[in-house]
Structure formats: C-alpha cells, structure tokens
Amino acid sequence: MSPNSKTRIRRFSPLQRLFHLLLILCFMTQATTGLARMYIETVWGQRLAWVFGGYTPSRTIHIYVGIFMLCIFALHVLYMLSKVNWRKFPGSLVGPDSMLPQPRDLKESIQHFGWLLGMAKAPRFERWGYWEKFDYIGVCWGMCLLGATGLLLAYPLVASRIMPGWGLNVAFWVHKIEAILAMGHVFIIHFFIAHLRPHAFPMDRAMFEGSVDLAATQHEKPDWVARLEETGKLESVLVPEAPGWRRAFHYVFGYCAVALGIFLLIVALVNSLSITW
Amino acid sequence: MLSSWLGRKKLLIGLALILMMTGLLGPAWAEEVRSTRYRYGAREVSTGYYEEYEVKPILYLPGGPLMRKGIPLESAPTEPIRWRTYLTDTHLGIRDYKRHHDCTDCHPQQGRDRHTVRAGITCDQCHGREPISGINHYWSPLSPIRRHAYICAKCHEGASVSYAEYAVHEPIPAMLSTRQTFPFLFFAFWMMATVAGGTFVVFLPHTALWGIRELLIMKKDRAESESKQQD
Image 1: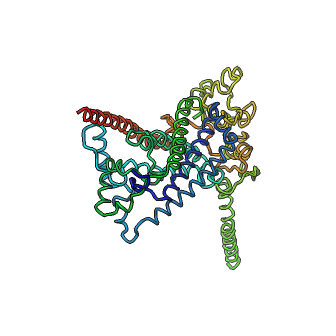
Image 2: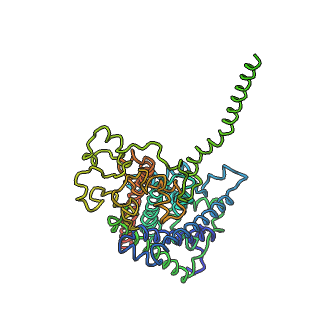
Image 3: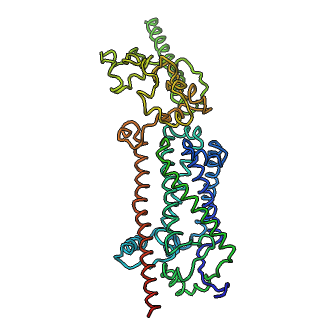
C-alpha cells in the first residue's frame, strides 16, 4: 500500500480538532491545578502545587484558564450556531450528522448493551455513537455548571452581592462534585473507550489527525460508511494516512495526556481520605 | 359661635398640618427602616461604622429565654444550644468548662473546616477571647451586625453582610441533619451526587463490558484465523 493511498475517512475539521486540542490542554491544567488545591493538605498536593508555584499561583492559574475555557466555549457555541442550517430549521437539528440525541440513540444504546452482554447483534452505528454524543453534551453541561460555579467562587465578593454568602457553600460543592465527575469520566471512561479498548488500541487518532481508518469504521459504524457510499460522498471524504512523524507526535501527546490523567486519578483516590472535604 | 368656629378651624388646620408632616416624615421614616435592610444587604462595604439605631439590640434578654424558665445549663451541650448564641458568656454554667483546653474537645466538627485546617485560623481569632460571647450577642465580634467588618474583612477586604453569611463551619452536606440546618446544600449535594453516581453506575460497567466483549471477539477471531491457516 502506498503512503498516499486514501485509507481513512475525514471525520473532524481542523477547527474542530483545534477546539479539542484546546479543551485537552485547558482540562488537564484545570484538573492539575484544581487537585493541587484540593489536596494541598497532603504532600502530593503540595508537590503538585509546587509545579505551578504554590497554592495561590495554582488558584490564579485555575481561574484564568477557567475564564479562557469559557471564552473558547462561547466561541464553540457560536461555531455550532453557524453550522445549523437555519433554512431547514428545526428539521436540520435532527439527522445523522447532528450531535443532538435522537430516538435512534436510545434504541442503539439498548441494543449495544445487549451486544455487550452477548444477547444481541451489534447495532449499525451512524456517524456519531450514543456514547460520543453523551461525551459531547457532558462537556457542554460541565462547562456551564463548572463555569458558573467557578466564577462565583473566583469572585466571591461580587457573587455575594447577587446572592447570599451561603450560596458559595452550595457553589463550592456543586463545583467539586461536577469536577470529580468530569475527571472520573474523562480519565476512566473516555480514555478507555477512545484509546485503550482492544478495537481502538493503541489510540483513536481521529481527534488528532481528523480521520479514522476506513476498514475499522466499516466494522464499527457501517451505516455511516453505507450512507456516504449511497450518496456518492465517500470518495470525497477519503484521505491518506498522516506522515509518520506526525503520527508519532500524536501518540506521544495523546499518551502523555492519558498517563497524566490516570496518574492524577490514582493518586487522588489514594489520598482521598487525607483531606478535608 | 365665631370663636368656637375659629377654634375648630384652628384645630382642623392643626390636624391637617400634622397629617402633612406625617406625610413628609413618611419617606424619611421609610428610608430609615429601609436602610437597616438595604445597607446590610446591598450597599454596605464594611465601613464598620453604624448609626446607633442600626446596631442597638432591639430586645436583649440577659440569660436567654430558657435560662429564665429554669432549664439547667449543665445539659446545654447535649441540648439544642441556639439560645446560647445570645449569651454574653456562651459557656456560662457549663460544668467543668475550664478543664477543657481545646475547643474541639466539645466542638470536633468545627475544627474540620477549610478555614481552620487550611488557613490555620484559630478559634479565638474569630470568636474572641474568654469569656467568649455567643455569636449573636450584641458585643460579639461575630454578631451578624458587624461580623463582615470585624471578622471576614480581616482577610477578605470588602466583605459585606451578605458575604458574611457564608457558612464557615459548614455542616456535612450528605448528612440527613443538614436537610434541617442547610437544605439548599443538602439537596444540591444529593442532586449532584446522584448525577455523578448515576453516570458512573451506568458507564463504568458499560466500559468494562465493552473491553471484555472486544477481547473475547479478538480471541475468537484469532482462533478462527489460526484454524483456517492450519486447514
């Protein structure tokens, strides 16, 4: 097979990959600085905070990266709105290329659970699987919740002008639990499904390269490939493999993120009884 | 007749003037009442200086209501102690109080909050020295009328009364008792815990099963390809 043979399907645009890259960098920074502050009573937390210059600089970084994340999220919302076909609205919101949940997703999730238990055939997925839609909507939900509570906690004096001070106690717990949910979901569920499960191993490079392997996709998302073939669009979305040096960089970067996430998760769990909750 | 009429007229004019003055005083009176509410709730930024009418206790009952009813003080640590927050000496009458050297001997939960553990703030920095007055007592630095200025603003410059409503000694949000003392926290905690727990309960087994299923399929495919090669 020549290096220029088109064996992959384009799945993400460069802008979508940039959003994801920024999300990775910001999320990892937030997870690290957040855990450093949360675990500051432990030696591990103090060492983690030391990387950023201590407890207070960790807080400062956490706040400004959080605000940056909110800006990126606002841009992403604008991007999403620009992608809606307003002439065919609201019909354009449903369809195989839409990230919004649809009745088909519920049916597929039930069938997929049946397949996991060996009781049903594997569902014929379209472009987006239900777990991918859940991940995406989970990020949006998390951005809203963590962003809102984070701003209240970052600027408590201003926040207490618009709500009673005890609202900060509530905001703190909401922020904390949502952050734990986000880290747990990304570091265990997302990392495993996207990179570590046997079918995707050693790494799903879709978000780095923008494309997925055609043969693997025919196996996992046959309805998407069939639709592209039927509509005659398959040829136009086929792309060649990325150069070796880029793939190597993607592997190194991706596995650094996976390793950092799993490290944070394990050490946080080990030290979880040593902190004031 | 005329003088009587003039007398009544004067009386009527006098009444009208009083009514007008009442009307004129009305807004000022309303403003004064409003200032008690709004200065603390919205506009106050910790000057720490107040008019006397703003801070003077309306009704101060020395000894607290239960004490006057003859309820023994010795049982206070195990009884609802809310009324003690109004005492000049909040530990008044507690048996063997002087033998305890550490506040957390009797208030263990109050030593586990972030202000105490992380910021290293000691009890007397906020509650004052002996005799420690109840947090609602007129002279206590933690009295709601000056808590924001005397205590919070030491570290949080610009703290308002609203800001001072932050619960430093936060109850454990998961506890059923918190439902009574801090219902918003209780329900917010359990709502978020349900969302997080529900996600993990569904997706952790889902993820594990997915991995196991694909491993089994790979093993089966490998066995099939090996048997084909042998054939």
